Length: 105
Image (tube, rainbow, N blue to C red; front, top):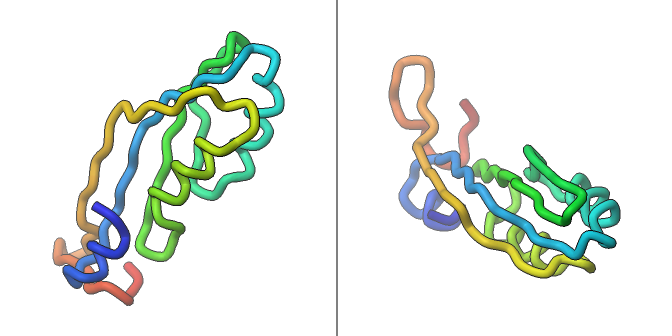
């Protein structure tokens, strides 16, 4: 579910996805540095063999997840990006009610 769809439905939602990023081993350090510069990216596991396990988070006021994935994919030295999982859930307030789009929790 994209940010646009979240706003069209009138509900703020949180989306997280897990990606596997592959690089050539000689590009490992450069790609790791560049990944840390992308908003919403967390590197959870990496190996100097060129493999990274990362998550991307999308909140209503954050960049679109598709934009974040494309940023990762277009980094110099990245060979492949694979989606491992995705999960979306509505944001709720302390009373357990959905929060309308355009408002904060």
